[in-house]
Image 1 (cartoon, one colour):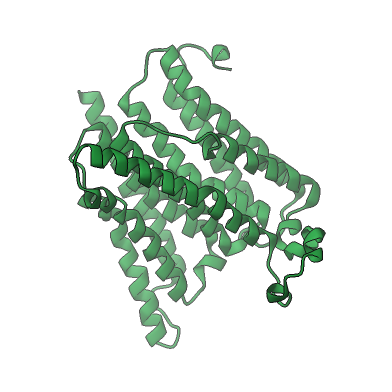
Image 2: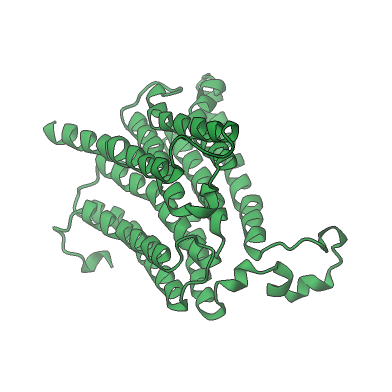
Length: 345
């Protein structure tokens, strides 16, 4: 495909075009299923699969195009991985539409974000992006768009019903401790992803970083401290969802995932910039800037608990402000400053 692209096509344009496919996919999911708990028309799943395939293709081509046109640069790496970080949120929303999993969509975003952040963290210390033989950017995405295409034939209800109805052979296995519990199939999928993909990947990331840190006689505590902002992000969002008087995880999954995805994109971009600028290893206090806003919705939810469920500020307003704060002033302003500074040089 790269030979069919004009040599003058900017790598940024290819990256941005690929990213726009996932934005369109998430938008389709929102239009057809605003809360991600109703089945969209089946053609939407076909569109999700096709758009994800196009994103994966363009994401693979942009690097080859950069080498072909001799335009590879640290700025290109920052832009490419920044878009990939945001893509985790938009594809999680598309997958939530297909699995009809409602508020559980945030959990699928976490499953995508954890390996991504840890891989970026590992790259910071090893200077090498190490991917296992079976990895998320290739086989992982392939399994997801195959799931989209499969749902075109079965309907989203197949994932949302009890796993024993979707997979009847499980009914032959005696599971007395689960006999009275209805477990949607997407919950089993989530558990399988955590056990078979997330945990082994995280163990590999930590092991590789530990090996490099020990070889350089550095501090593993300082290395692990760089994960702290991401942990604070996950903990802050989890506390907000738990205390939320309006159940934002169930009623506003799109705004919650997009705002958190913007926040995540800023953290990833800041770490990549630290790596490109060869900053000292250790915690970057500037990474907490994007997390400050979470204090307000948590305090608002706590006040609602004290005030018989009545918050000071409507949570929908806070969610919109959350997306605006993490999206415009933080993430895009950060990248704009980097672009302007680079072009001045």
